[in-house]
Image 1 (cartoon, helix red, strand yellow):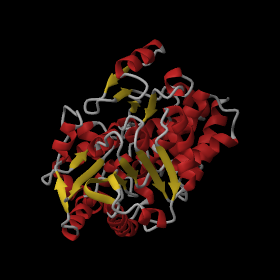
Image 2: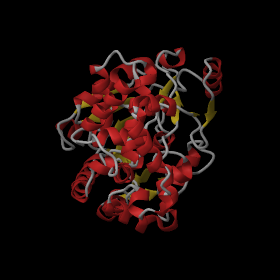
Image 3: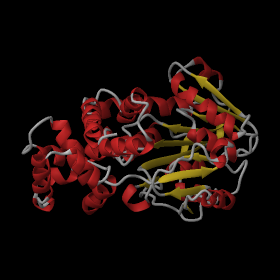
Image 4: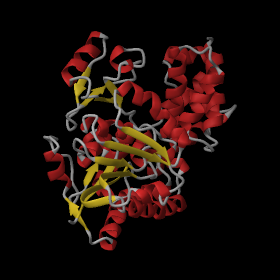
Length: 419
């Protein structure tokens, strides 16, 4: 495709994404379905340029003010991820002159807001929580996330999968914390590899893998993944259960549960029972009250721990949406807790960076439910053969940060129901 035509497509895509009326990944996927003639390299250039704009939107919008023509075209030129030579072929002489002048600006001298590229409300919260660690976090969030894989221990060993990937020209290294994880740099095409199609591996961030380790289900138990979504954690739990017992995958979204079906077929698991529920007080939940050994509540949250992958979230969330999420998180956690039998384990988790969704929710639950004893995450992970304990907060909760652990941002708290 001619460079100018591809830059026009980037302009069109950005115009749609920057409306912020849908998740960016959904908009990009729909755009590619509409333009099926695009090659893999062209799709990569368009997608990565779009995400680069989302990561540095405030800075790039400021720099783009001096140019002319469509704003989205200027943003695409500033953030272009398809190679400088290709970009020069798309720009006229005046645009090239403008771009060179703008790129010569010393960004370090610009106001702080243009350097951290966060909305004011979010920057304020993170500064209060992190202090001197604020800028290391910002720098980490500006970088694309690596690709983490979870080896399906029901079918394969980590070293064998690592060797199979190497044979396909893909370098993978063991993750530092999860005993089942492999980390790959870049975005190699895995979907056609045999290790993927036969279910030996699944794409899953290392932090998410550790949530399954923290719940640590055993053979023959009854387990619930309360907010299962597309089932990444469900599959990890089923493998830990060695395909025994009963594992219920509940979610209010049938569409998300539908995405679990092909993954479940690849996994070799037969102990998983997906079920759509109307809400956290659904009759299916009531019928299982007091019968379940372990419950994972990976609650709906702001997703701000995944900004390396989903940078649009910082522009799509607000203080009001956080307040609404907090009420929902507390209701879901309280309802899920009713499922547990005496001695059962409960894990509450989010992929958020904020205390209001994490420690505050956990503290409120502990205060309202004295029948649940807090369980230190470090001891639980050690018992699950996680040899290197990641960071724990002062209350023994698991806390993962992109700049410290190279994972998505995760929080998890655990409790044991008293006998």
